[in-house]
Structures are given as C-alpha cells and as structure tokens.
Length: 249
Image 1 (cartoon, rainbow, N blue to C red):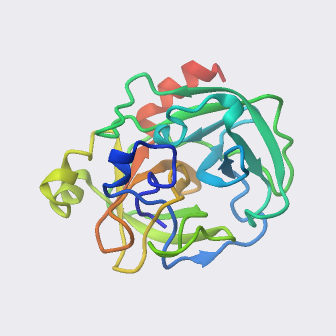
Image 2: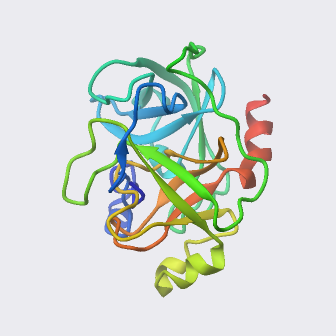
C-alpha cells in the first residue's frame, strides 16, 4: 500500500505522471476496530481520495497533496468502517490548513490539518491516536494501513488493508532511490522498506504509519507500486509543534 498515493489525490497532472501511488500492496485485510483512528477522505462524489488520521474529536491529519486546491465543502471524512463502500459516519469539514511551507513539487512538509464541522463521536470503532514526539530510528517494525490500490492497474481496495514494514534511516533511503527521487527525501521524511510486491500505492496517501502504538508518519509518496523501492512518509514528530500550536490542543 505504500506507493504514490498522490495520483489518486487532488494533485496536478505533472505530479500524477511521477512516482505517486496510494494503496497497500501485499497486505492483509484489517478487522473491525483494528485501526479506529483511520479515516477515508472523500470527494463530492463520495469517492475515496486519500487516507486521514483522527488526532482528536475535531482534528484529523492527512497529506497536504491530498487537499491541495480543495475547499472544505468539497471534501469530507468517513470514520468507523473498514469497508469504504458502506457503513461509518460522515463528517463535513470546517477548515483545511496545509503546512505553510508545503512544497507541491518537492513534497516537503506534505502534511495538512482538517477540522470537522462538529465533534467526532468516539466509540469502540472510532478513536483518536497519539502523535509520536521523537525521531523513529532505523530498523523499527511499523504498521501502515489504507484503502489504496492492491496493484498499480487495479481499483482502490474495498476493505481496509494493512501491512508491517521496517523503517530506514534517510541516508539509506536516499541511496536506494534514483537521483531524482532522492531530492524528495527531506529532514522531515520517514522511510520504510519491504520486499518487492509489498508497499503503498495510489489511494494510501495521508494514511497512518504506526510505530510502538503512536502515529509516526503519514503516507506521502512512493514509486508505484511495490517495486522494491522505499516508501516515503511525512514524519509527524517533526511537525508536532506546528500541529499543537495550530490546533491549540
């Protein structure tokens, strides 16, 4: 599921031709309530655009390239269901705040806050997740989830998928990518690696990477899809201060 989720998201055609995807390839189906903080970001046609993550009753995180160019009334979030075609509760958005230093070409600071119009009701199937506050070292086992494509020529997954991956340090991550893609790995990036046939894909962007029970990253980009290149996430700990000061929580 770790490939360029950007393609499915609201992104320019120029970016869409690059390595962007957003589904989980080679993963397993999640069970009800297994990822209660996972949300589906939808457009006006109720189509899944990207993943999102509940961080409290009014705020969610996603990738900034998922919301770029959209007004709050054009998007909404659905929580509480692992089936993207049915169930769950829908919440309209009050505001979208993309990181002020988000760069749509380099994907630096690829993170956005979304505030719902009214509080999210927490249940056994709907819960917030704590944000990580420290840099995740290489070699940690992490879990990513999402409704991205199951392969690059497939449609988005109907059921929420997840898989385990291993974190890399940024130097190792850069060395595993070609010269062009190395420029998209920033100090605020977090990389993971898995064998060929396992990774993120279109539709996974904005979805959570969990390490030791806390939110460590948001799917940002990858080389489509599951071709053996590291997937790249926005590191949440790097942006924690901005998130807290903006939401005032």
